[in-house]
Image (cartoon, helix red, strand yellow):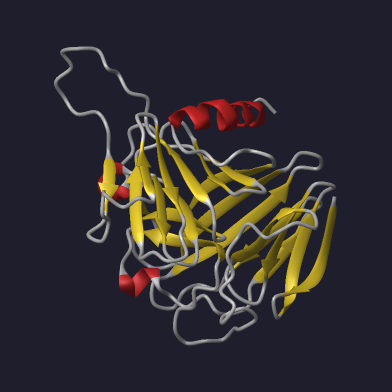
Length: 304
């Protein structure tokens, strides 16, 4: 395990955490943001916007790329708060805690705790939002990983029951006004929805209720898997969905959400993800490909 201060993509104050297999880099100049993740010496699985790398201090919201933390539902006045300023930093033996200043217009304060496994290609990321205001606020922690170009999102759908005679609906799937269901980037399977990133395409988005607790983005050279938990009986935004994927011509986002709750002044909500990295997984084209090539890796990761 190694933790050190490095420069990355124009930012002079970054923290790099690595073991013998993988590495992540978080900038401390803006955010909290994780701007790099992947295997040692290999490509960055996160997207970075070249025009925005290394910048800070802007008065308007800047996307940057990488992994970020928002409060859902998406509201222009709250969501696009400019997180463009230095963070408070605390390091551990196996990671780092990054904390922003309190947002002046929302009263929210965002933190990201990143802890890496000593041997496995695995990182635990605790996405935390504290209500530092004077009144109760209802929101959900929203963890968005902006993946590099060329990936395929794998979104597991809640297991189906095809027993004849069942009369009531059982699944929540959300689409947006700009989502075309005939878009060839989608493959709508029985057990999985696949969404492909393409460099010549307009934005599209889909969301599902996911109780299985994992999703993936598959690249030709590596695969990024997220593990997360849905709280039973709790309310969720966007028609009850907690797993979402958005893509445009540059990138693909793999997003998970926590429960939509009233948060009292001084209270902190936490949404935890575990990131797992794998290599040599063929790009899936349908449900059977996922079951054959990705599920064994998921099961292996969950057993460790």
